Image (tube, rainbow, N blue to C red):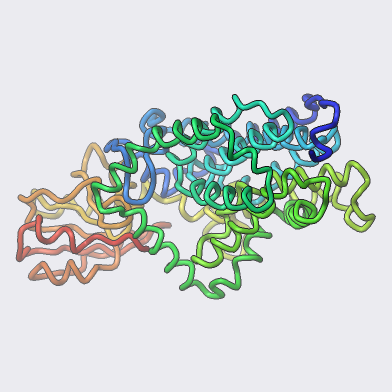
Length: 485
């Protein structure tokens, strides 16, 4: 057995860990209402009004949460994200505890979670990229706790949390495929012989079955969605070359990136971690997989807490070389937080966003201007023939109109992403108010398409009136389907 199985159990450093968790939660709560809804949040709200067992671009958990929290307040909608991030701090510290870390290692790990650029930035709003890494953190804690205790009841909980993760995002499936291979190669192989591991797998299978049935009934659009995302990533400047730098940047500079690299290196090399080594190889396998398929760099965010915890335990024990130890100081952690805040959270006045030379959060432009955008669409719509349908090029536009214009505009449609399955124009609509750059399908299926001006403001888009539909909507609408951007 590895040394971690022989140690005396340590206690959670509750005061400092809960203080860090509370500080992160309070910070996220304080800024959650500063701007407005993020574009994807508006989409989750729209999807929540069309509940289904699955969607073309995601499993059903987030639309369900959005439906339950649809009060019109961004603060309320973001409560699950805020709670997930604060709780994630605690579970990250618990991973360090299970690895033998005392107070310092737990605090270092908790602090790394709290200053991580990816977790801070997406923790600000409700997204799959927020909830999914949190669930991975819980899964990793359950695994490392099982390695220490060999309590097979943990494996049943492992299945239940995996089921939740699968209903949030399908990425955890890749984790388990690679982890099983890594277990066969590096051990401990007895984990695979535990009946409750497979019972837990059965629990996860039951939990994800309705979504898989929906995907099968609809032609597995999630596979096409994956191809669309890969195409988007590969089309960006730099392509694959940016994967590693982006991953390090999103881990957090300098703390998260340094602890990630050092922790992974020690997982793969040190006999201290031989019972956990398969998790190191799983991390490497996921990095190679997502790199090969042009996945997004943040897909590996769920593995970061483990790497941070291993590095923190090494630093606390004194096994780390002297030139690594500079990272485990509060000034460096404070520097990481200061470096991350300007680009991660909406701490700046909205008036600054109009000036490209001033600092702004990464997602700021997607959180402002939606009410004004909808007002402009409504003003134009009032000038059009009765019964005109609204169709948009991008799913955010339809989601915004659906949310802010529900009492004055017809339900919009869009062929973009998963919105294509939510609604379609009524057969009685012979004319269309189209928002965004027109698709070829619009020009091909309508006799005339003429410009109507622009929406203006932060979400400025062209508007068009299409008239003289040449075929029934049942034949026209499939041509508008586009899972890419």
